[in-house]
Length: 436
Image (tube, rainbow, N blue to C red; front, side, top):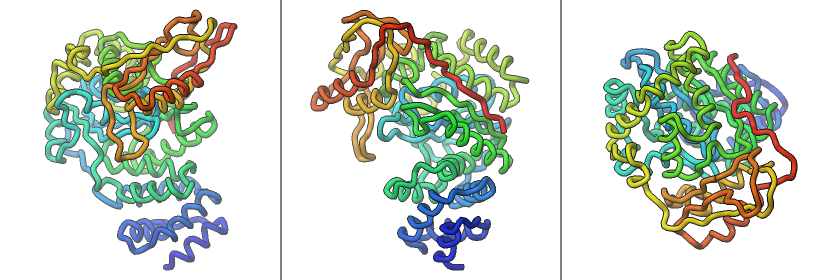
């Protein structure tokens, strides 16, 4: 078998066999196939595409390229959740302890943020002392003891994806549904959970900008999960504007704690309620999503969800007082700047991507993997799309310590917000469900 023939086959519109896919994945991971040939192959895939069977086979080969976790020793049905990324997306901080409080074990690996989107690991590190790196022994012991653990992704999990993504990033081949789906699902399958919930974001702050592509991506990922024996459901949610009000690590932890108390922004509460309800159905604690929603409400009202979050924080070395008194324990920025409305009317647009980039300029995110995050920095919105606003009224607060990019961040943020004279409908947070 020659790599030349495999590239030529896809270039001419042919279909890969499982043997061919395993050949180039194994060869690339073991450095037997050079970057330039894989780059040519990725470009051929980008233009010619892959069908569902090829995509499933690619995902399986990538998942098998490194370590695969076995969660069989954990009692019960393990359920994992993945978001395709967005601005202000702190749902994992809410629904992971919430679902664990129901008795469903949650063994989750999460990543760090890069660019205008945030990462769950960075947010958790805003809690003083919280340990985001665990050995597999510690990880499994925590899930078995308290029903929950969340750690950074191991370097041995789906190494083919890590290598392929780095190459896709520099060869303009990121934006392909089959390649995106196999990248996400290979890591989820290698993580070992028996059931998977996918939160597919769509809008200006998401990787996928239009609904048709979001449905296509969600559908293929659900089919991949089900094809390999992992019952999978996808929820498509709005990312045209930031989720909730807070964008930035410590700020988002505070908002997640409010949400676990039954408070917090309406859009965040609604999305967390829906995602958690689906996870309860997947974990066979609820017969349907309606019963799941009722259980979610009860877990929050009783304080069980909040208690589980506190137990989770303390178990991974974090200061439990950060949960009880976040205003005084979590990092706080030294400077706050109030952004005022230039005119009166109704908020008609808040670009999630621009807000995320503005927060990154303040220090809340990374432009490169080497950048250092200011865990206290970020933006707190006071208005969302559809809200009325008066001229001179506060629409957001910038929380920051670094001053070098404040003017650029402010200009970008102001460009992200539009105000019109006529009333504007509020946006629906949950847009669709994909079951098969």
